Image 1 (cartoon, rainbow, N blue to C red):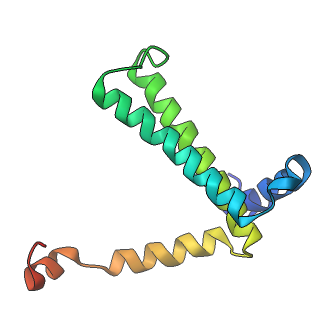
Image 2 (image 1 turned 90 degrees about the vertical axis):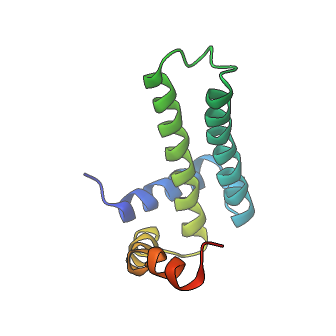
Length: 113
């Protein structure tokens, strides 16, 4: 399997080649927002049981969500490349911090609000 760092480098090289006008933090951040919006729309329309004609079954819906998540990750990789951040290190560091949080203990000491 390809390493995250290698994927990040490959996607940035692709971005430089295919969309040199998008080599900005703004363009990548807006891309994250746009793709996240598409995921939100899929989830909302499914919950509302409307506009699902193109997603006739659960598998199609899951594949559409997975595609959106992949697009978001690619935009985040490119955002990190522009900001000179190693996405793998960022994820690893954040996961380590999150795993140390004990929200149940916090609620016991501070209430539920």
